Length: 263
Length: 281
Image 1: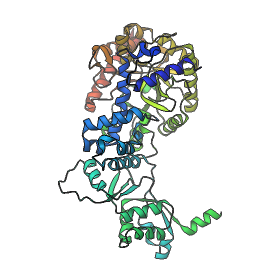
Image 2 (image 1 turned 135 degrees about the vertical axis):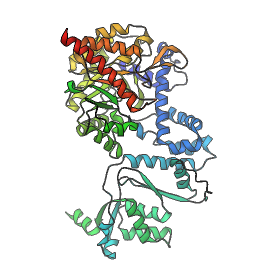
Image 3 (image 1 turned 180 degrees about the horizontal axis):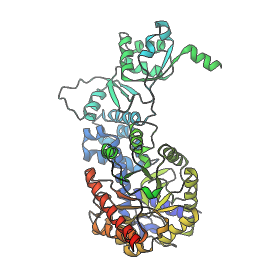
Image 4 (image 1 turned 45 degrees about the vertical axis):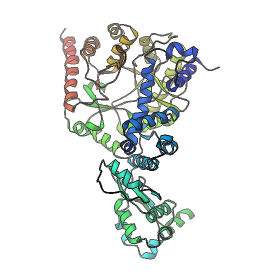
């Protein structure tokens, strides 16, 4: 038998989210008091406010009323797992993908994924970004055998069907530049080399390049991965764009890596 | 250490610049540590730059001390890491729970004050103080519901925790006002009975009537100026126990920083008025 404190906590935990909190007779004397609604409201408001803060682009796209209704549906079944509400809503993009009222907004889950990237980049471990000068002395063949690890805060994704980056950016930056959106696939890279999160558009080749770097492959293989996606990819320009953005952290020569593994 | 702290303010991102620049005597800032439990990024940088200028207090909302199980090890270790980084002047938590079997409820939830709860909470406070290697202060919560099965009066419960664990207490005067009004006890008598020797910190704040029930149910909303009734209780308390580090607790409907500095002046005047009276009586 559970101790009484545990039993009390279990009942309150159920009643906080239940549609009829006073349905359990043993608990009705507590849950039917008007004051119990204060706890229910505070918990639900805490969850919904956190989702709205963590997914501002989604909220701006659908409007506050729609967003808070969706957030309520999410919070009723996805309770926070820890107290850092900055991280709450990890599964919200997947939830939106299955949320029937959002069926007509196919871009919504991926816009939410970029909002999530922003949070992850914002709170990631600090790391000095790799400076372009650190590569400048390497000969081309040495460069091909060098591994560049993506920066701790860097997040990227290619969205093959929809202009997710443009839609997200317009809502994140609160800008509606008015120009027509071209309905084609887009990718995005979010970085935080220092304090502020920044973002740039990234094509499929660029995303494949970073995926390869993330897997620990040397630049030669990463270049092949990028060319595999787009055989006309301008690799020199891509590498320079990524370095300027602060997308890389550590650098390692393959031979250094082999030495390290051997030792 | 706490004697040098005068009145402090809740630190919100909107106030980072003003907070860092302000040179008011004895000013300190309080934050919820949960908002700074990140691996890196600008939040920690902002807080550390303010810490370089002012003392900081960590006021936790999620340790879930009134819990049938021990504090979450990961959470406690994040709190310890933050405390090592910031060397806060004070660390406090609530007489409440918020976690249950892996789920976190973002609120400070009530419980029956039984002997079982007392030993569980004393154990949780002891574990926390051991992990942090320091004394923490435990805050009296706001009350909204009557609970059957209390074996202990709240003040006696808090005092017993202080005696068993060596912890201090944080007396939230607004919570006393709100709880007294909602449950029908005397706020004045609560303030008069509270054991001053354990009080490490005082909180004052504003509250709002429930949108549907009005003044019959007050909400501890921290989104309004400290009202005269709460200031009166504060003066009554500090007249009796002397000044303590006092937080103007404001979490919502945020005014200009100067407005909060003016409320801070009120707290100083009331508390130091009492000090002068004691000194010259």
